[in-house]
Length: 227
Image 1 (cartoon, helix red, strand yellow):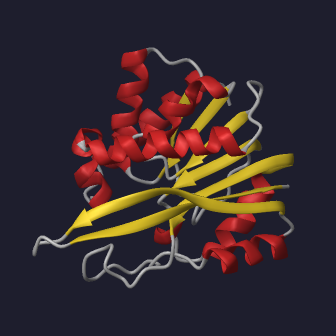
Image 2 (spheres, rainbow, N blue to C red):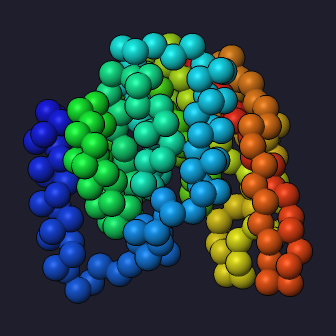
């Protein structure tokens, strides 16, 4: 689908959903407008982009997908590396904010797509799929990793950036996702699916201070593989 047409479809869908009283705002919807004001998120995205560039042999002709793109801080840092970038997120407000940013900067090679890949099938194909701090929110990570594999062109790359396994203190009480990952186990799952050239390394450390003033460091990894 052409970029302009797809963006139009996305915008029309958003207008429809915003007028639907059954649509409820998520935590990410509520945070979308202020997301880019957090310097920690900006610094993390820049560090992750640098690590991806250093690890994967990127080519200007690549078509990329950022899954769980949020306000696309990572893709804005990578926008000059690819021919096309599809930004996919299931947060309505995040997609709205990102579309506004793309329009404001008149960026031609990025398109925003409001889409729930966790529960829907997407017909496109990509040369690289990447995400940051997303997979620990995905309930069935095995199914999602397999879906990424199907979406990749032969010889394409996957880059997953997320938390190393932690004690459950990164998120507040009530979080129902994963408390990070044992990266060796995650690499084994990729191998079982069919990925090859699997490697991983620490790429950044997040520091969070709790209400008692105690600061904890949470390292995050970059896990890459090819199809």
